Image 1: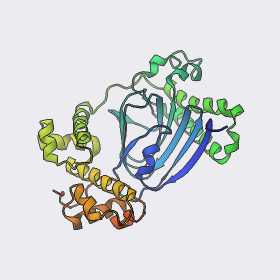
Image 2: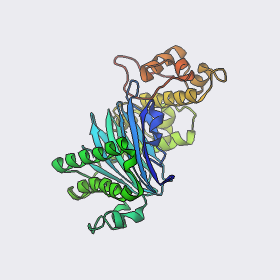
Image 3: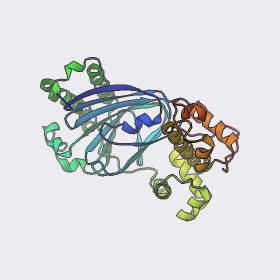
Image 4: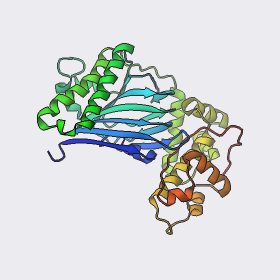
Length: 333
């Protein structure tokens, strides 16, 4: 069988585990919710086709760059709070289409679960055979959002989770002779929700805010690991703090100062986690990300990840999040 067939399941012990949220595709992740991240990630691989199912207990921001040449079709399995992909506001069992070589971003405001298929665009003709529209590769070349029927959507989700649970418990059941069956069983669950839905919902409700956020994030990308102050962003984008604040609240539910601090905390966490004790210091890493008041930094860090920086540096687990503690003044570090 070699690499042709794969069934893999693991517990998540930090937001970094979600970099592989879609099997075979790297995803950039920023933790938004507070607390120790708990969750699981399971993959089924059948040749170049894969199904990934992930669960997590805190809010997350996910981004994927445009280097992936595979088609990704995802479905929202569970959500305690709002979930948005691009400008699409997702409901339970909705299906999302991410075409090849297209950048993607999503925001999960709370605990959620998702499923994502990834495969070659050329496979749709055979995988969706019998459905003229779905078997046409052109159908999948544009990003899309399909609103699931409430009744059939729940059934499709139940079936999809059942397939994954079965294959996890019976790995030997995924053999070359049964692989095609399981692949089609997985695809059918997604297809049911697409076929029963309305046409793709292209009327995103946050386009202007998201365009501004995109410009901000392009500036942050150019800055790389360098910390960026909110005033620098205002200057670079040519907008006032009030406009920037409104856009961030509309998209993320928090202001830009809080969001930027969370990004810097996540950068510190990742650097500490990848470092060996004795080769770096917490103070150096924190200050390198713009945290000058180390006492306040430590408070933010513990509130965010549920552990002290020294525990992360020593090999502990952690994560990343958002909302500001009630009554606490915004940090100007």
